[in-house]
Image 1 (tube, rainbow, N blue to C red):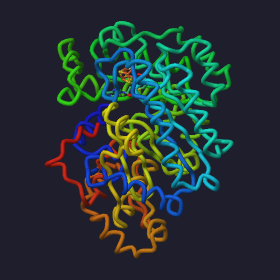
Image 2 (cartoon, helix red, strand yellow):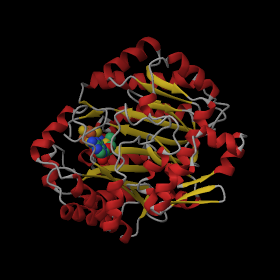
Image 3 (cartoon, protein in one colour):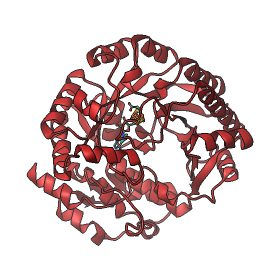
Image 4 (cartoon, rainbow, N blue to C red):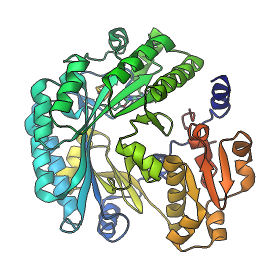
Length: 459
Ligand SMILES: C[S@@+](CC[C@H](N)C(=O)[O-])C[C@H]1O[C@@H](n2cnc3c(N)ncnc32)[C@H](O)[C@@H]1O
Ligand code: SF4
């Protein structure tokens, strides 16, 4: 454990998260509504035929002081009603350009904010629109992020009846002292009762979110939370490192007054929880995601078909090109990214006036698509098979190496630390290597510039 800790500290340098390639700080405002429309049309011919849908619901009734998400405190029902009408109009305007007769939806994800905090009638309006517009694949994953503060028995039954089959529950910490300190509402139902109800209602998957690095948390207290989680036995679990960016999220300053754990303590929380989860039967996915061996994500990692988008890890079978609706949502196509206005009221105005609300985006060149593939394979599956990529893009091996700026000496430090091996034109990252995978991905990024850009540290 000590060596691993030293290794992680050694590689704890600023770098992109690579939830997209190129990273979101490359998105620019020259990419407009008309660019989105032309890329929507070509997305029918290029890239995955599968359709993934992302719905962003920014509303929360109370703001947790740690929160880094795009949220807005509760607006009147009139504003929520207008917002829902905008999402429905946006779906209609997108689908004019999409081949919804042939292409099927394999993934729907509702994120926020807190999607389960709005009235059921609003959730039903959007779900009805999705069901009336698209062909939903029978194995589609239909997921919603929920705050347990708004989950009672009948809410769970309603969500299941509306078509959701996976719930992601934001736990953060089971310790009520920690929740009070960060201004977070408590769960409505006891957690044991909640997960039993979710399972009995027919949901096929439950995910729990945790954060470490908050005030009042210690290695021992976070271990207690993780032990409780293992007993409750969700299929998937994430331990997010608390991202403290008070210059962007002013309210986070309040947590400084309460006393944040040191970086050393945070790393110990991460390592200790990882140890407990692995001993508790979970498989580690990337740095901070865990899944039971029988879960689709763990199976996909073994089969090397794991994939990742802005909504998190997914399998290549369930995900497709992502069409995002609502303020701040990101449409993620084969050759472009397009992000909507982040501000709720600007988004509403633009949809009501123009039908689309693009704030910024990025169109990828051929070379950037090659890099995107190499970086995705690195980040998700820990293997880069140069031969497979050469064939996929009909290029030569030396063209591939020149596109990604490949130099073996850039990998030497990782090889010396037993974090990766090079075998027969294949790069294979070890289990320890996957914990600093962002650093390894940086070696395949010819546009990397950690000087000017403000990236968080890699651990
Ligand atoms: C949109 S929220 C989840 C749904 C719901 N709003 C809730 O809080 O339960 C997404 C997740 O992002 C994580 N998160 C939010 N702010 C964060 C931060 N500053 N650092 C790390 N993770 C954060 C939390 O774990 C949270 O569950
Ligand atoms: S963590 Fe969830 S409930 Fe808390 S403010 Fe953020 S989005 Fe809202």
